[in-house]
Image 1: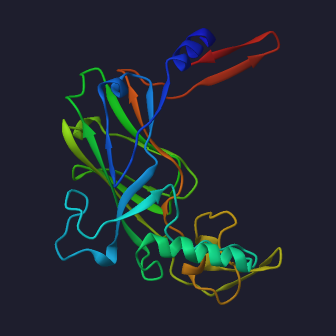
Image 2 (image 1 turned 60 degrees about the horizontal axis):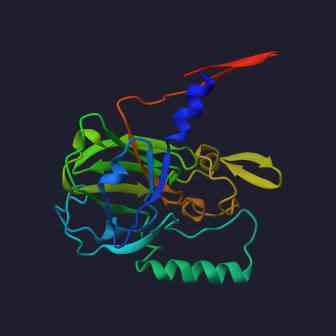
Image 3 (image 1 turned 90 degrees about the vertical axis):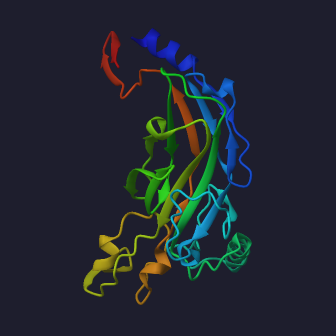
Amino acid sequence: CLLCLVLVLSLVTLARAEVTAGQVALDAASLEPGTRIDVTGHWLFKPTYALQPGERPEAATDDAGYLKVPVPSLLSRIQWWLDDSEDFKKWEQARLDALGFDTEKSDDGWYRLIVDLPRPLPADRRVFVEFDGVAMRSRTFLNGHELGRHDGMFSRFSYDLTPHLQPGRNVLAVWVGMEKIPPQTLDMGEAVTVNLTASKVLTMSKGMFGPLAPGQPNRAYDLYGIWQPVRLVVRGPARIEDVFFQPRLDGATIDL
């Protein structure tokens, strides 16, 4: 089993696709099983407040109102439990200004990546999109079909694109938004010099982000954006779901 695992891992091919203006083109070589394609770069983004009545960003291909934003990156102001340095505040403001939209007004929006497939996918191939981390809530669509929803900031998740992938242009759309826990001022005591309220305890883990201090609104420590790398993964008809390592004093057994 260990030899099988080594052979499988040796077939993995790492590639980087050039993502510019929210588009990526796949060639025939990148559709070989075991290929992992890094699709970080500049995706398109439109804040929800800029959507027009009746607009369906999960399926539309019109780029009007969309801006180029870096992926991975957070789209909201980063703060910390302790007071930030003045230099950090200046750099953070410059980063937000470069995004091109009102980050103080926006708390959710739509990413878009056009995936250009050169030819029909072979019958024995499957293509997945894998996210290493998205804050805080997300919904993912391909060509208008919802693939799934995910809540949280630090966990990885993936979706199978194959059922809705077609030759030519494919619209991968990802809605992301803040957690938006209603403020609750019920005092729950103090932990490590930080006053705890019900809303703080109910929020999803955000690590060291946010000035958890009395009187701060939920938005002051809420975040959103695709803040970790994204990749496309091509697999054959089989997929390793999990690996179980069972050690012994004289060796080990690995079950796939």
